[in-house]
Length: 105
Image (cartoon, rainbow, N blue to C red; front, side, top):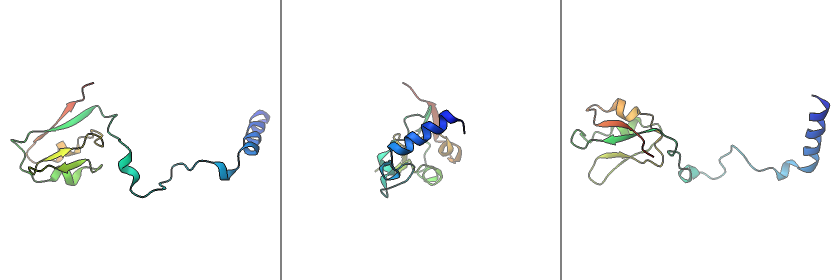
């Protein structure tokens, strides 16, 4: 380690104890993932054609983010707050009822 970096590191260590460090990369509260909206960076989103949908739930089963939910009518839709636009639901749909469309600004 060069001398300048060593001085910086020792200064940091003297100014801040380990007890004062913020907890990072740790889930401190079980079930807190629903607080984080993760779908805002997707570029494509699923759109369901209810005329083709047979309400089988395959999209629901295969969604890696559990972003698909069942509506009161029995159809399945994506919760766009959590959907990342991976397209697995559209690929797995046996009737091709799900189309991935480009996200509009």
